[in-house]
Length: 434
Image 1 (tube, rainbow, N blue to C red):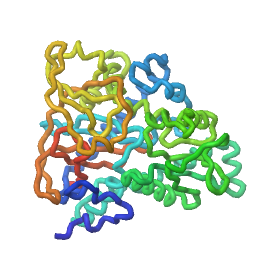
Image 2: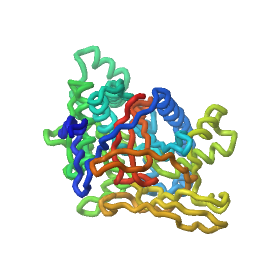
Image 3: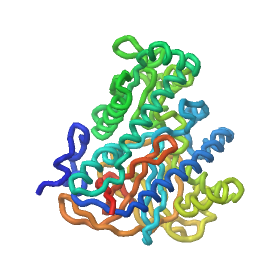
Image 4: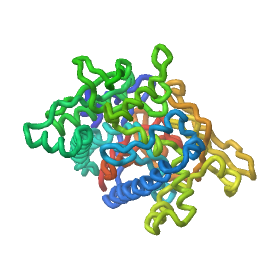
């Protein structure tokens, strides 16, 4: 039976079929919500971003020991204070929410450093909604993405030349070609597809931009930055490679490649998208910092506190555990990804009794930094949903996402997992409007 999945362009959505999985990644069924739900999802994300931004300022002004206590890589700490072209700690990010048993949104993670799920939300959702003749909640989102990329591109160029010279160049014949390089490890299909998608969207937004793809395997540095085949150097680099891993990369001669790379960034040899300080918000215990500031009752305004109370899943540092009430909690490693090493524990006194551990099929394929610390969140009992995939109908749980373009809420997306803690087994589910 034909479905919207047959309409998806595999040259754009290159991971519809994924080796090792019986079912295709997209579900056959779709998820419908009223327009007010999508408005609330975007409103919650926009306000939470403002709240997180305030906490990021606290982090950046705090002594280095504060960052060490949050398991921030020691050699990364010096690079988290530089200003950037947009003046924001992350330029492209994604909030993830679950739905509690009453259908309320509860934010559980912020993907601030290297967010994926763009193709599903900005491209596939439109194909699916059009196929069944339903309204697409992301109808304006692709244009929003292009306008944002154009604004980001212009801000990077303006930052390179300075305001006066930039305006002079615009007035007198235009800007010189500035190579904007997009990079990932090209043999990881999802990263490659996402990187290519963003590069083409920037080109659509800025037809005169000099956009290029360079595999991370081929990325080099010299005294002037990132050299390219034609002798030029990259003006900016989009990197789909986690900063907490990049910082520890070594050259074949065991030199600290990551630190040398960031030294060049600090010397303004190129711009980075996302900037290094996105790692502050990516650090899972950052939610614990936000919640701790909320508990002080003095830091956030009443409207901010209301948003935190309503949407943010209560989150705690590892050192807070002994003071928590008995009950069930999610335990997460600070640098875990794709559900790896997530556990549900029951607190009884000072003991954490394992109730359930997230099992990940492709454990060895998930590349992430070893965590020295963990954090805790209240265990949210979730609302059940039913969806149809290639293998039949399944019952499970939803993760709702909202992309942030700078500080503006944009496309929404949905994943469906038969397990309460979503990981690599989750399916993409298109969203439509009731």
